[in-house]
Length: 386
Ligand SMILES: Nc1nc2c(c(=O)[nH]1)N[C@H]1C(S)=C(S)[C@@H](COP(=O)(O)O)O[C@H]1N2
Ligand SMILES: [Mo]
Image (cartoon, rainbow, N blue to C red; front, side, top):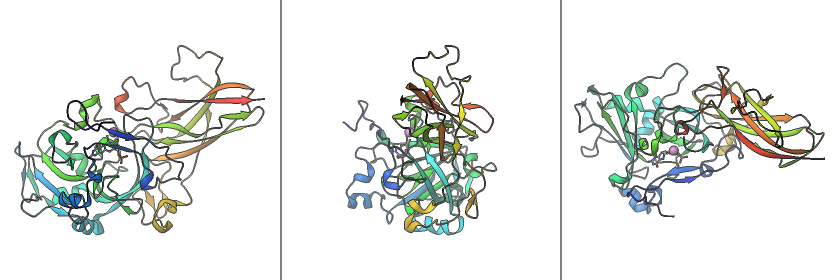
């Protein structure tokens, strides 16, 4: 497959794994990818990666004023003036300001998460303040290495207020350098990527090298192409993980799954097995009146360390008090669930799952605009044999 679109932009390359099968945290090398670049930055020869700052020793982060506007910074961090931030400098900031949190990444255009991780980094605001902004900033623009080709630029943007303050209970936007206790691999966006906790994946720019503080008032994310909704936060929905393709009549049917906990939280996961030869109500497309049965949302894993180096839980994430999450499930993460369906008569069934959010609303809601985050009620076949 060609890595370039007809208009010269690199094509998005997608790997969608089944996540959740390796335990709670997805090992770094088993994540799914949505990536662009021709060539992909982390496939460049090592000496070229050194040259272009894709190596921890040569990585630099610039924080600049938008050259097309009236933004004023007292101390821009620039390569040109030798004031850009290096990886060692970022780690030093991390000793004082570093944070960790659990977060899944999902592409708004894919119906399943790409991975569930423990991210570690420095809040972006720490570096914004280092540049001593003086006047005229409404938005933060940021992009990664793109082979110095404007057609390959992948930029996202945030309102400055989102970067400077977090509403109570929300997590900071971070410059992330570790995932599951290990430095970020090139494939995962290292040396450093941005992580925006509540947002779909396109806001979490990989191979980050430049932050531009701007007075522009609107979003100019590259992802506005392709009809994507740039403001939609992560949605709550459920997915099956393991369902028996065939089960015996008269015995309960064990099923497991994962749920993405989006902006509205997660109160329940529910399942429903419908005989395929019985018609579905035409006036109830979201099956609101179906006989849904509650599944059990599984508690935090007892073995957090499985995906971490040496099996050690490194440090307390922001969502924790000591070694225990303050609440469960946590928003913007993936949780696991399990259910035992009551014994069924022989036949062919469609097995569906959905969620109820913390406001008591069934999710997914009607969604005629999937570009705000694909989320539908999943259906899988189930055969019951006598
Ligand atoms: N530099 C850069 N960052 C990027 C992208 C990209 O193509 N280039 N893709 C984005 C999109 S659309 C998604 S969904 C996530 C996917 O993150 P992952 O590949 O680590 O799973 O990365 C985002 N960050
Ligand atoms: Mo994406």
